[in-house]
Length: 541
Image 1 (tube, rainbow, N blue to C red):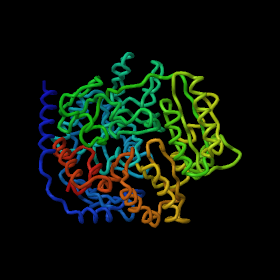
Image 2: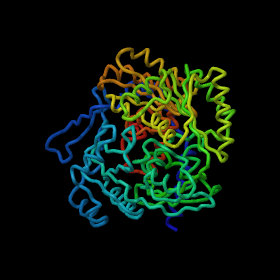
Image 3: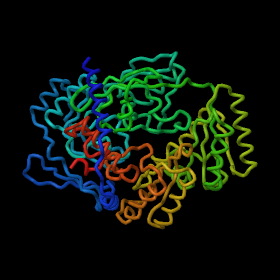
Image 4: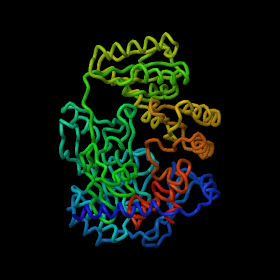
């Protein structure tokens, strides 16, 4: 009954927020904020006042950076807090070891680093609830963490926040073979779920390059997109229900397994993509499609971006129901992969091409699907859309094709400093931004374009020998302004995290952001959940 009352109360409060007349907002103020907000990349510098109980007061990111101030209302850890958590979780689940903390304080790209002194590893939802209830009462800020594979600084502390890692909550609760509905805990690694479902004759609707480390709770909390969104849609469509713990420890049981449920507000969508800022997702119910017997992968070359666009249009028309992925990368991305990843070979070795496209089809009739793909490729080559191409003959060759596309982020990391931008744009405009950035940067850096062409998601990367403010000044705010001008999104699938929290106005109106802030205030009045992330810092001041 307590769960039901909490949910009903939340619905009433949300209704009052959304019905409230929003006060007018100064447009000039937000335009000024857009231009003055600087990126949270690169070198992290602490500014300390020695002798204080909590020496870290504010933190800069890069030499032309936004200064992020520690919220003065937050408390700092004391021995009584440690004793409470050890009594609640046991000694082994309360981590204070410096080497372990070094790992969880740092994101995988080594751009963001916090200074947390405590890592908690709960094993049950009840333990998560008790942790948050205690932290809320003490005003101890908390960072929920999964596999820590994020790219925008959302999964690591900014200051000394307590890290709550859900990796120990990794049980599969149930799977219904008739409906294909999987219920599991948030700490399940995506690749383990993929393997489990493969043995059951099903697949996950989500597939990411980071699947070996990322956790489903983090995937849901960031609304991760991935490689097959063009076929199976986003997690907003595949997640049927979830369980989440609010900042005060209240449990919201929305773990439904129904395809249809029109009883009131569908609150689960607030937590999908909110990056742990509204509550910690502890369980997930997700609809999984059956594994189909036929899978084909083609690796193709195109002479220009216009051909890639036309090829996508033709693929949607002629491959239709069996099209499951349509990825592209430019010659710069291909060159990086071939030069920086061991064992990767060019499937089309005769010459380098300006663009490459990876097409995947999945269906239930091997001969029919193969014939359909071959006919599509033949017509595309005759029409001049494809310069060269090859179809994978076995699973090893298919894996080698995917290795090229999935290996681009790793190759970029090995090449040196990288500035990463994850953008949604109209397909016809996507590569114009890449060309503009090359003109803008000249010899300062190398500009790489690749991504999910099938759903209009460009991964724009700027690669350089080292981080340089001159490069950064040429990239930002230009990239965000360009995206906003073309009515795109500054975050297609990576989220906002710390990196883009102050950039949200490029994609959302002031009134919309203010309403988001009201929802945050309702669900987390003390602001302890993943502070300094997602929403602009001005809303928290």
